[in-house]
Image (cartoon, rainbow, N blue to C red):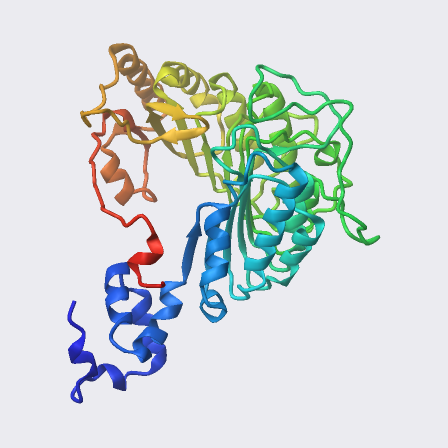
Length: 464
C-alpha cells in the first residue's frame, strides 16, 4: 500500500490529533500496519502501540528470544499477552526448569506495566518469588491459567494458580483448567487419566511461602475472597472441599458469571453435588452460569435470585437434566434462557429427559435452546465437523429425528412451540428466542479458509 500521500504538504493526516491517529492504527490489519510503520520514523513510533498491543509467545525459547531482542520501551506497549513455557529441556532437573521458567516470566512481567489480559500455559510450577511479582500488575484484569496443552503429564497445583490470582490487585475475570488439588477427601472415580491424579488421603495442603497472618490459604475456595472478581471459570478440576459446603466460607467476590466444568475423574453425582455447593456460596449476584455437570437437590435450599441464563454443556449426564432444571427453576424467579448442549449420541436421551420434565419445571415461560454437536475433541467441543474432503457431515438419523418429534409434541402440549432453524439464523437471533430452538450443528458443512503466514510472526510486521 502506498502511503506517500500521507507525508505530502497537502495531507490532512498529519493535522489530525495524535489520539485520533493512534486510534486509527489500532484498526489496521497487520500488513497495513507494517506498511505504515515504514513510512517514516514518526509513523514507526506511532504504530508501536498497535504492533505490540497483543503478543503471543508460544514457547519458552521464543519468550527468552523476545526479551533478548525487543527494546524495553517497545515491550511496555503490550496490553494482551499469551505465553507458553513449553519447550523446557527434558534433561534438566525440575528445579532447573522451574527456575528458568520463573525467572523468564518475571522478566517479561516486569516490563509490561500496561498489561490487561494474560493467558498462561505453564509447563512447570512457579517459584514464590515469581508468583509475588504478579502483584505489580495493577492494570491486569483478565487471567487464564492452564498447563501446556501438549504436556499431557503436567498439571498445576493450587499453590501456583490460586497464588497468582490472589496476588493480582484488580483481577476481574479468571479462567483455570486442569488444576491438581492438594486436598484429602476421596473422589468417586470412573477412570484414570494421564492428565490428573485423584486427590489422596495422603495429600496435604500447600501454601505460599511465609504468608502473612491475614493472607488466605492458596486453596480453591480462597478465590471467593477476591473482592474485584466478577467472572470465574473452573474446568476439569476436582471441586470437592468442605469450605464450599460451609456457610463459614467468606465470600467477598461479586460474581456475575460462573462456569463450572466437570472433573473427568469424578462421577456425575459427585460433580453435581459440588457444583450445587459452589453455586450456593457464590450465586447471590450470578446472572449467567455455564455447567459441565448437572445439579442435584441438596439439604440446603439453593438461592440464585438474579440468575437469568444457564448453559449446560455436553459434559453433563442426561439423567441429571430433569433434577437440574427443577432445582434451577426453583432457585431463580429470573431464569428465562436455558441452553442445553449435547452430543449426537446423547440426543435421544436428552430429548426423552426434556420431554418428561417439561411439564414439571415451574416458573416459565422459558426460552430453551437445544444444540447438537457431533463430537468432543478431548474436553473441547468440535463445533464444526472436519473431514479430509470437507464434505458435509451426515444428518441426524431416523431415531434422532423421532426423538425430536416427541420433544416437539411434549412442548406443544405444554404450550411452548418448537422450531428447527439454521445455525446462521441463530447467530443473528440469539437473544430473541420465543420458543424452543433446536440447532443441528452436525449438518453444517465445513468451509476451509487458508491464510499463508510467515513462520516468524514478528518478521511480518518488521519488528526485527
